[in-house]
Image (cartoon, rainbow, N blue to C red; front, side, top):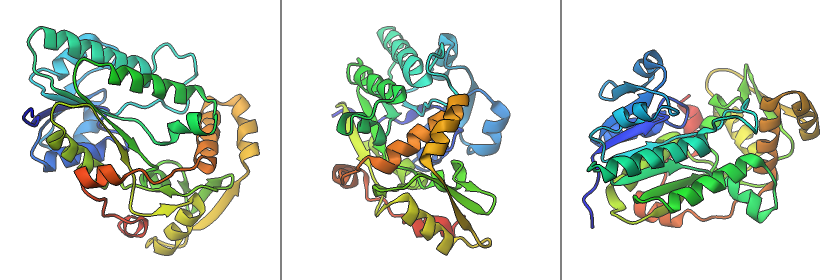
Length: 299
């Protein structure tokens, strides 16, 4: 078995889902480099131990500089809600392709990049299980195929809905939790801190094989159940729950890419079953510890 990587470059480390991974890698004694577009933001939000490299995912030379001396790469790439379907550059498609190409080129020249870790999502499987047609899910499926065919071992993480979605992802507005449509399917909400710890452990234990992990939290909750738990455990004043009909948001999406994105995502989360599939990840990477109530109490 190959020795664990110790030097990891993170691309996409300053976002809601990237920061907890960077922090967990630092706590795990990895040497972490982050390629960022905004150095000032990165200095404010990432640990002091992180080496920062200014760069753009569309620039091959920037990626090469960020990967200098790296042994592993972690990609936290996402498509922003306002992005149109036919955008010239989509990070989850073109960014993945660019990084894979650069890693292959660098390794051919003698670099030692031995593993790529990438965040995907559980919900994109809705396209297979419920015939849920959405171009963004097709992009995610394409990325998974490209990663499986890469010339370097990869680890793909498929997390459930993040707890951070409730307070950082636009659900919590003012003193209200704004729910869209009717949530029918429980999700195994995962805290970013637990996810980051599991990513750090994966770089330690996966050797030289491709690995794929479903990342699920300790308890299944619908959005309604999560909202009620939030209201009960939030310590900074009363919170009310508001609801928007899904049809209304979908109608508004005709005029806004961002609203259309949110409507489609909520439609998938509300209607697509999420069966339990996280046992292998718990066995190999450690069991998530943070319940939704515990997460809210720390806000």
